[in-house]
Length: 403
Image (cartoon, rainbow, N blue to C red; front, side, top):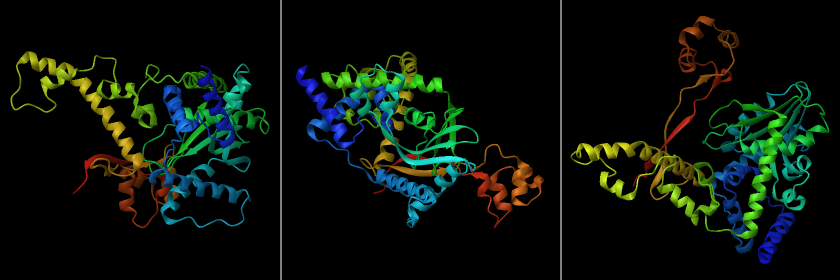
């Protein structure tokens, strides 16, 4: 145990010296669900120098975030000259910027790329937390933390530039909110609302948001504390036999420890449901493709009893593989993401037909009769209706690479 504790001390010292966040909010869905995975990732990083290499998709997202931050810094007068945003980033960055700024009236305070010490906030709510470890192992940077003084609202907003939809009511944003809450109190002692927002230009030009109560936030901080304690415990004992893993689509998809994780292997070949998974013998018996002739009734019934499990198993594989293709932004073993179509555009939520007609300078009957944005756009050629429209989400499939 003594050697293990020295290794834990080394982890804490490394976090202090380098500013590395072991339990980063951006990975909270992973380490809160499966603390073992982060313990093993960090063990490999500290003891063997294992470093994550940023892929092209991540580099693109980083660049967009940097330009978005520059826009906010320019607004605050922190920089006098705004660098030109490259064409490949301009549209997405401007969509994110406008979606954020449209929230606020004149009375607001906005901070971008704000470093939040989540561990400090946890200790203020739970004073018995082990200070040195908790304070230094959990912190992160939020894209936007803002106060709307008119509505007395604390906003936590994150920009996402990938094509996989993100729910604003996520562990990442709630962790940021924990860190931002005590900062906000010095400017707004009476906070009436706490809202979490996601702006994701490839999917929607509209900010998606939800509200959390202070009680829910404090409860979540307690959940963070429990998960952090498990990471520290597993790291200090270096449990590596997989008994402490809790595999699932969300946490396993991005986990770097899944390469040697026994639970992950069992999860992939098993069933994501509580039902008994089909055995290898059963799958071999019924075949993974329809046989030339249907089997006898008893065998057919047995095959059908497994069918729902097989479908769910396939859904897990498809979801995980799509996420991997998205992450690497390149073919994997001759498979690639293929753009299929874009879902139909929709009118902006909450905007009445009369408001749309008034804004476009047309008769309301035209809007109600034609109904959909695409039909209206065809009729009103040359008139920009984008202000009232949410672009349809792109749909991707998995396809073999062309030779």
